[in-house]
Image 1 (cartoon, rainbow, N blue to C red):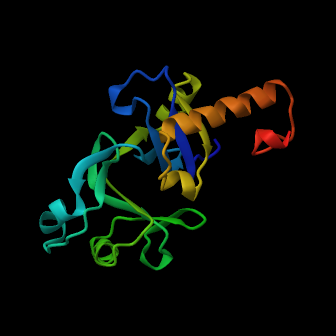
Image 2: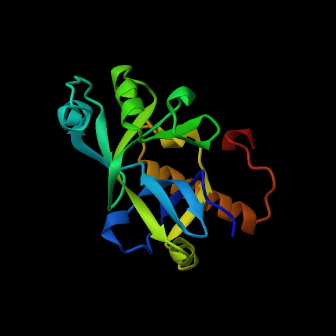
Length: 184
């Protein structure tokens, strides 16, 4: 089994589960025992300021949105680039933190880039691999730019276009595709 830790999962149109319709996930754990990740493109209307007294027992004014990380209940997790406040490195320069004391510091410092997520997506042993075989998911290596996406276009659409372009290049056996087609 090849680990997908540090990869993005992009839901295909074949995935019918409404929890994952047009979602992009970052996989932060993938082993024989199972997998876990966070949905990156489901911001909620809740903010750090709104939940701060309940979660941190302290008031913060940061209007940073909280994302819905998946359908599995779990703790608040932050994706960020501060190694000193990390619990785990997912890919080079990208970390997760769920430790309450470290989270409090991240909020006090209003660390950017960051993504706050409540809950997570989880799969039992072999479950994710089965869903990939059923063409429910496509994967590609994660990049910090995609994890903290701030582009005008929808992240899911951008990644699906990238996946389709890669597929076409493989079918046509094109080895070097320019980033800018005008440079053709």
